[in-house]
Structure formats: structure tokens, C-alpha cells
Length: 230
Image (tube, rainbow, N blue to C red; front, side, top):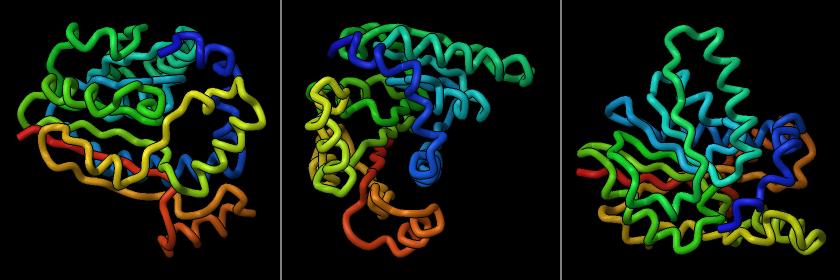
């Protein structure tokens, strides 16, 4: 992995969530991923914390979070975001920040009640092997939940077009997997696959997007996968 890949885009990364398309996409992705992630204890490892969009949620849920990211610039923004939350939330547990490539620290990890990752495994080489190793760091009853942009969808084509138009785009380095490919990964136990983002990137309004989402027709643009250690 390239630790500089996300550094150049860090400053404007969160601007996506301020757009109408970004906001409604985030809404449905969050609903799916957050509904699937139920760690049985407090210790959680977050892989690819980015600017802290989900780190904030994990902390507010009461988890003790170890947040890993390969980008120092992204993590710096996450730290500012979490510092603001800690100021107003007295019960928030401090985040342990770990600037690292997850593939380089697999043997240094502790044990966790949950492992959570959103839109990071598109950039992790050999994700199946990495997930197998992560699975061994779960406590009994613990779960891994990862969210990914789905391959062979309107959204994967949207990001592929962005990469074609801009070869320096981070998505030029992304590998997008179909729900069938993700479901075939041998992690240790059978996985559960959740689906969302049933509206295309060229949807015109939030209302139209949510209407299409409710119909759940066609291929999903986003999937979340979950594995629970028995």
C-alpha cells in the first residue's frame, strides 16, 4: 500500500458528504453498516479510519477504539474531529491512534471484540488473506464488518470513469469486488452480506434516491460483509 495515496485528497475529502449525492449515499451506507456491527464487548479495531467519519460514531456508541490509518493527513483530521467530540462528551473513551499500514502490523495487533472498516479494503492487497489474519484477533463472539463499493455496479463504473478521467485519482488504485466475490472469501466462518445503494450516481434528488433505495431493484452499489467468531 502507498501511504501517500490519500494524503493529497485529505483536505477536501469530507466535502463529498456536503453534496446531496454524498449525503444520501452516506445515509444508506451508514444505516446498513451500523445495523450490522454489534460487538459483544468494548474493544474495537477500526481499519482505515480516514477523517474519522465512523470513528466518531464508534466512540459515541461507547467503544474503546484503536483507529488505524496509513494516511497521516487523514488521521490528523480525524484527531481534530474526535477532540471536539471528547470536549462535549464526558463519557467518550480516548481513541488509540495508530498511523500504520494494516498489512504491516497484523502480527502486532491485540485481541478485539469487533473489527470495523468502511471503504478501505478496496485498497488492501489480498484482502481475503488479511481478513483471515484479522479473524484470528477476534475474541469469541466478536465480529468483523467491512463496507465496500460493489464491483459490477453503476457505482463501480462511476469510480472507474473518475479514474479514467484522472489517472492520479485514488480510485485508479482501487480493486472493487462483487458481492459474489466477497461472499466466496474463506475467512473462517460463513459470512453475512448486506446490500444497499440501489440508486445510480446520476440520481437527481434525495427523494428519488430514497424511493429507488426502498425498491431495492438491480445490483447494489455498496455491500457490507460480516463474519462472527464462534
